[in-house]
Length: 219
Ligand code: AMP
Image (tube, rainbow, N blue to C red; front, side, top):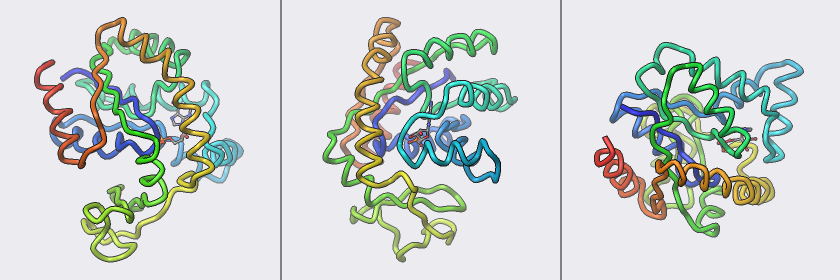
């Protein structure tokens, strides 16, 4: 299986869809956001720096992200492909990613872009809740996606939490940053002929089917 990169605005469902692909195709799901959130929990200077950047909806310095990502992609479970969610986020990171892949003897694979209107994203962001144990994502603003019992994970009984950056102010920063920085990235991957645009404004299952179709046709 080829590597997969997801490009999508905040709360578009890239984490959820990456987890579905992870199970279906047995590929590790690597999220730079998750890696950075883990690092932010540490009681260190680096942890405190990352925590502040995340809360403001800005981007963590490239050198830090590159090091953490390269360490993760060098692990043996990534040898046969992976789903990368949250990287690259701008053209500079895309060039760096080409270098990282070259060093690891890996190929780019597919780039999947999820398209969703901004107003839908705003609703999702304020309702998003995540299980602190298994990472399952819920949405309390959606009848189909809310947990059966408030604040408790249906799957494992873990507690649900809200990300610090899941508020409207931080969302607006992250969304504007996404629009500004992804355009050149999309042009870059379109030229390479590996960009697939998927309409992500549908149920989790429908979007997963659309992605599946692209992956099966492209295999
Ligand atoms: P995400 O979970 O993808 O929404 O990412 C959450 C936050 O982590 C972002 O708002 C950034 O602060 C940080 N982050 C994630 N990926 C990157 C990246 N590739 N470069 C810099 N910062 C990142």
